[in-house]
Length: 111
Image (cartoon, rainbow, N blue to C red; front, side):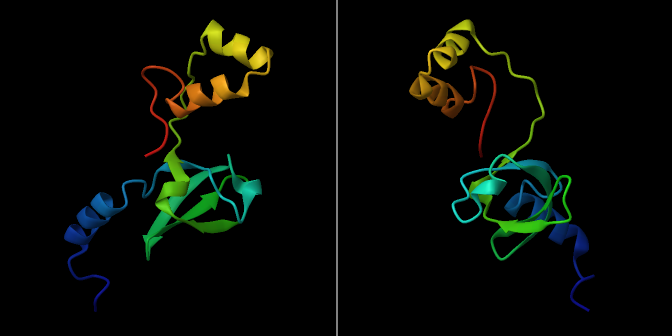
């Protein structure tokens, strides 16, 4: 009954409510499962405010809130000499600030 009804409009609503659905994502900010931070996967479904993410290279599928995911753009981002120098001298704050700003001018990080 209900699953097939309005499938087209349901898909449109899902795309609007869950923009990462079907997308490659990166997990981050997980305090209960910190070992998953930085892991990549695919957001396979969205239910009750969480994505089910299939982790790359694993049989594990985890349920994650949208604010703990960002789209995996899989792009190479150019790193400026200033950021490389900051990393080499151990200036963690400068490197983190660069990452928080999207890793440069054009790149977008987070959602």
